[in-house]
Amino acid sequence: MAKTDFSAEIRTLRSTFSAIEDVSDVDQIKADIATLSEEAGAPDLWDDPAAAQIVTSKLSYRQSELERLTKLKTRIDDLEVLVELAELEDDDETLQEAEKELIGIRKALDDLEIVTLLSGEFDSRGAVVTIRSGAGGVDAADFAEMLMRMYLRWAEKRGFKATVMDTSYAEEAGLKSATFEIDEPYAFGTLSVEAGTHRLVRISPFDNQGRRQTSFAAVEVVPLIEQTDSIEIPESEIRVDVFRSSGPGGQSVNTTDSAVRMTHIPTGVVVSMQNEKSQIQNRAAALRVLQSRLLLLKKEQEDAQKKEFAGDVKASWGDQMRSYVLNPYQMVKDLRTEHEVGNTQAVLDGEIDDFIDAGIRWRAGQRRPSK
Image (cartoon, rainbow, N blue to C red; front, side, top):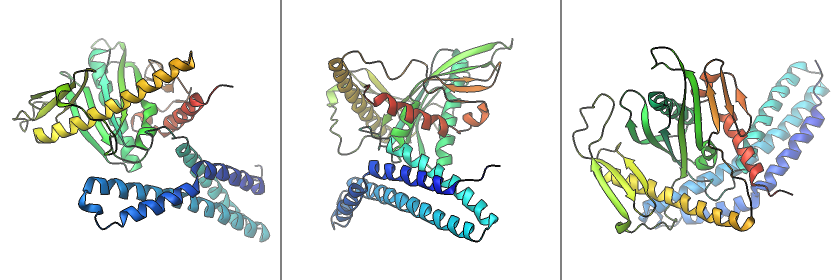
């Protein structure tokens, strides 16, 4: 077994960390912390609870960014000292400990590097994710529910709070559509690479002849709206329909017309909400998601105009971005990044970080201007 060249490894760690530090702009982080701390200390801060929440959340995130960078630099310094002592005393046990720490620091640097690639206009926002069944009948509805579970398990593993805002159940099994919200910093930038068409290939549990079935589901990811966003929607542009909430098996609690369907007439964008107990709460949630979708639509239209001026630019996303094959072999493969995994059950249980990281790196490469 080759002996680890700790001197070369530590030089590489320091070089990578220095590049991340430059991109992160530590001076700007410190300036933001000073400004936000001053705002957070204002005596009238909580006169507007919603605005106060934004200030304190941003302050907390910027402080954690600085702490993460500071701790990582300290870990690299401590590793160097640990290696020097171990080599001085010819201590194999301590060198093995240093080897483990080296692996841990590499992983922490990889994670931090991914965050530096989230530089889009809305990447730092929370996310609203909608999953819709596509072609494939009941298998597609079942697949939509499988994807919903996958993302909720992913959020749970990360300690993120996911709030389910709407579920529309299919008649036989699965979901027609579902919407959930993850109000965590950079949730949009992270999950936006999951947007697109997902394909499932398996022996259908709903086919009594045991035939292989291909089905599709669409994933949409939009950024959470903030108070500072100027998306005003005139009442005349909105149509609101109310209806009785529904659930699997006809839940007895659904006895009032509390569900809300909101349509933005000029664009045709439709949002449904039924998971809150009152019509007022569902209306407020629907309006927030509608604003988020119109905000992203506005950005996409602006980007389309820029692309038109720039000439022929290839689209970023294909119609089908990932395949989940459960039969005749086991494989989940991203068709953009070529990243693939043979343990399909682990992926469907929420182990999708490697797919997300590869997607973020792929997107960063797409954004770079060609030479």
